[in-house]
Image (cartoon, rainbow, N blue to C red):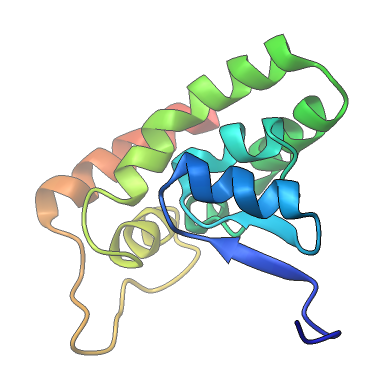
Length: 136
């Protein structure tokens, strides 16, 4: 292993792979699939590279802190509240949903380079509604 490589983004989608990487101990393991953040950190992983965290990143930070401070009930509550956001962020190919959500708030323009396309109108409406719900 190269000495400058410190971590791995685990996108395998396999609990066996995640556990093997964590138990090996040579690299920090970062969840690459956003819905696996909770289980990866609980199993000893170091965090995530989470596209869905572009919206309300402080909630993902709170989740991480709760889990790493042995506040499992709090972490579980935060994670379950984040699940709809995570699911919508991947309802269509990334990064279209995240861009649409951020654009609905006026933070970015809803533009993507080809061959990527914008999120559908139906998803864009659902994301805008989610954004309003998350602000309450």
